[in-house]
Image (spheres, rainbow, N blue to C red):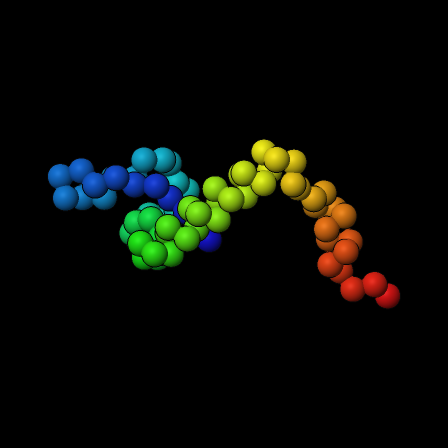
Length: 75
């Protein structure tokens, strides 16, 4: 998927970057407006992120490669 960035100017979409799309090509636009989280889900996410940062600051981390080895099924 090709992502292009545009801004609204005088009620029109103005592309902010060059494109090599052919003349007359049709494009579909979707408004990107944050995420789909409600207030409770966003608060829970922020709480979990704060807990993770606290654990990392306390040195309570695990090496990612070792974690993957432990989680992968052994032959």
